[in-house]
Length: 23
Image: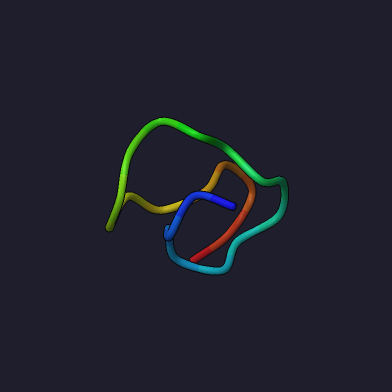
């Protein structure tokens, strides 16, 4: 699981990046 910020969908765009549909 990619370590990104909790948003809407799990987006593997990179670590520390906000997921789409979230704060």
